[in-house]
Length: 326
Image (tube, rainbow, N blue to C red; front, side, top):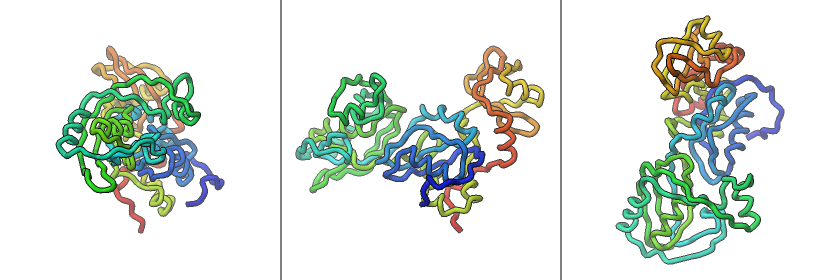
């Protein structure tokens, strides 16, 4: 892949790219490469994915960045592999081995642990994480050899399934599928499960297979994206409103659209609603988000008239789940 530092002519790009992030890249590195390939002026993502993890990473371009915050709270689904019998300093394969123990658990015990960790649980955030204490990321303390006190946090494990278990042999492991709330550390979940099994363990593989309504089968890789012509790269972009699934749709005529875009509340026969996506009627175009209270449509995040015109000029359609490289 060509270096993202190569100078390119940037252009306004508006939409969402569902990226299958590869191993070894940070979320920001993946974002910058995709931004360079699309020659986009403005880009952001909807939450980070560790360099040692692969999978679903929605990237937002242009006007879509205004709504990226909506997906930070989305539930996530992961497939993870936990090596049993070996604890590391970081809880994953990057750390130093700090303890080894024999693996003497059986499948019934594993199933009991699966049940124990399903539902609301408490987690102590790992030292090697980006969570901040006193304005400083925990991993910065860890790199300096310091351990600071962390408060346990409540997270929700919606479902936890055992995909594979190898409890004998030289490299015992568990492979699990987890659907969880935001803020869940899968590394910590793996460590805690292995600790209850009496052998300890650490995370050796992690893949995000879904975030909110987006799944891995919808995603494109950076390698495939690079192989496409610019026109076909653009076809991988989804419309901005894909981020607003679950929002009630309200349409406004031309006069009310203009006032709404100026931040002025509109009055109508709408029921109270916290999550509304607002469109202009002629032509049909996304104007932004709002909420309705006591019959008033109250503007939230709004697109600019320039952004709306740019989107109307280059409308996007939902891209295929597979990339055609012909």
